[in-house]
Length: 86
Image (cartoon, helix red, strand yellow):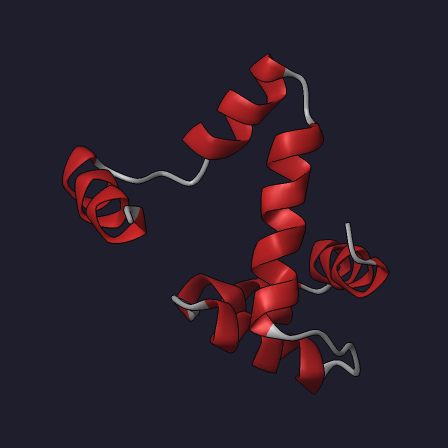
């Protein structure tokens, strides 16, 4: 995982106000902007690729748990998968 993303995660854990702001963020760009507000810099793509890398490098059970924790309902998942295809 990108060190800046790890740093941001640690900042989020320690900052209740930042946690509240994150709850309203819907896109990677918004998360990257919030990181910038606390002096941490990464692009939206770096954030997404860090998460993808974490999924790929995790054991099977951990990868499934991380994915499941996203909290998508079936409709959202179907919509996303349709957009991810070739």
